[in-house]
Image (cartoon, rainbow, N blue to C red):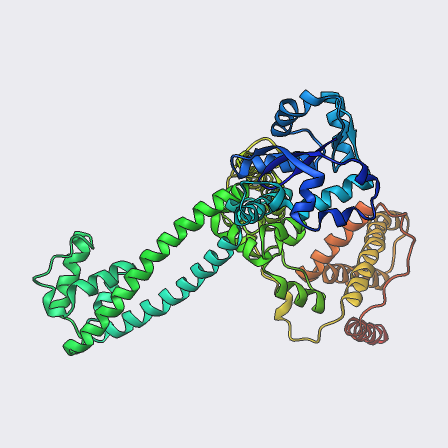
Length: 556
């Protein structure tokens, strides 16, 4: 019987010398107490050593998955095939089935074989010659690490902790740089205040201060390598008429030392940014294409790792970084935030305020897919990120154009600007406001106007009847002169009343017109005959006076 034994260094094939002792499973361990006893039971026939860790990893993964690796197949063909009549003892029954199928070798797996393997493992150093203990332990450790990385699909290039540390350091550097530059501008501003207004760039300011020192040196100093010609001329002119105070050489030396610190930190920041950009393209290329290096790194840093970020849904990715605002909104029952760290992405920044919420939602959805592809996918290309970004840009253009086209009315046509036409409303002077008499309510006015209209018609009819009847009566009978006078006076009174009724104010005329228009539009039922309107108290007094005069004349 042959025994196949796997080690971290290679494959070993032993020959069992005494097969009868394998039947005593419970006492088999006693035969492997010492190397001498173990050599009496099994003997090393062949040892195939691995060339490197990669080969060892390939062989180990093949055996774990129950497959026949190249190196194992080579060993079995080389050694075991010569003694095909003998059985092969193995640890994995699944692997035995594969060997039997491909190489037609009879394989054995039993409790006795498992106990035999345990004994060989205990006395491995004595049984396998030419392998020191230190080398075996080193190879075992290396293979264990490689196998665990393979099982977790872990790559040393995809260490996202470097990104978390780099983005945190970058933020700290920005804060420190701002503090240093503010201190430098304020400090040197006592000596040369005009320089801070002329040079706005912080790095150029610090380099200029480092080169100038005392402002009296500006006239003989060349700053063309730092500043443009027009700004250089402006600096030289300002130095001659500067309002700054005089400072000692020791103060200038400290300011220049501070400028050195600012320049060094700025250079290190640019170097760190390049490093972060490269790491992001190596670890999360699709996420970098979608939202940029800084935003992607901040998302990973906020989640803790790329794998943790991949577990978040798109809705969480959208508001990641705005947790405080979210819980405040939930507590006060107001609108929840639409975006968090993703707000600083270029796609969200270039949209109008109206569409920022929509774009941030779509960008978060596509970014969630990109994060999962980067964290769990085997490929390291950015094709998916480029495709999704192109779709988002097309959608953004559509949303922006939709807002412009909607004004014109037709969906396809572009908006057109209509000609401006000025419409002026001519207001007519209302003389009704000039009256000092107490105003009457609108309802009363309308009632009076309606009664006046009804009164006009019967009066006119009576006047006509009088005119028509007048000639007939004259022709028929000769009336007395007193009766004629009375008739003439009555006709005069009636004509006066008609004139008074006609002389109505313009405001009342307008109300009459409006009433007529309303009646025509509504097409109401024909009017019912109404009683004549009562005469106003002023008219009643005049009529009474006239009647008294008539009576007096008649009596006379």
